[in-house]
Length: 380
Image (cartoon, one colour):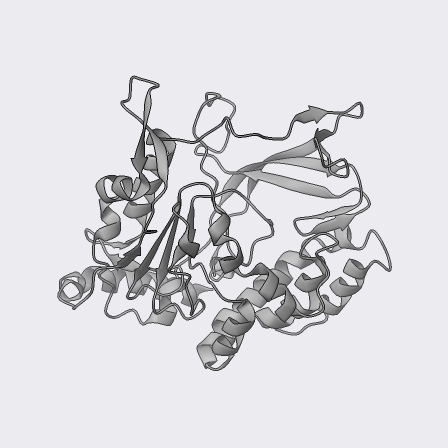
């Protein structure tokens, strides 16, 4: 553990020491793709008015997210596979616990009445003092998380191909197999171990059987974990289970859904990402999608020399993008939506989906899941 922290500290020292040298490296401006017909979005005319006007998403990005067009200058001494290692997970969040009305699969928990965590991150952690109209930014985590779906407007390392095509690439190199693939597979297995009792509630259920097989795996790679567990328990019937992990990857490939996005969406990728080797740079022809590709940056990396320290190139562009969406763009809230209601048993339901329902129950609170060196690969 101490050696890992020494590595991170050493990298930070080298970043300051070689800041001048890194600035002299040749680099290229990022490649940015807009649809030939960018979406027109409603934008506030000013801070003190509710009036809006329609503006091209491309024009908004070019004028209000100018950091996206700046060059990324990587740390020359940080080879691409190490770019991800300093990503130690430290998180504290407020959580509520909800019970589903019928047997179902939610996140990574399956039982006759599934218990799920609705995780909500705030700064500060407690949100009770925030105004009702406070903008909320939802950030979806990556492959080693448990949630199935969120609405989001910014993504990193978005792949256009099934993971089945990525896994063999990882397995061809020592670092790819033993750091990336086994790192992600191990993260998922460790996450599963923390919820074993929840999965064992229904003996003989296909998920319980998949659980036993998964717990018996020794240092599984990502594709081994998915072929044993995720293809079975990664979602609800009738979509799941899949026959093989490859079938699951085919179903989950992003290029199937990029064309259907209906909110402004930014995806940032790196050409030297060892995990994501194919990117849907055409954005599915969707006017709401903005695709960016930097020449380097690794997988969720983009480390660069800051003012006497190491920072990430993506920080400023992402903050500009989130500010644009939270403060300036006005989404259409008049689109037809299904009615939400609370039934006689207290379950929140939606018209047209009588089989789904949930209600908050006792429990939850502020949860501290700060990670130390053992979480060094959690962000892969």
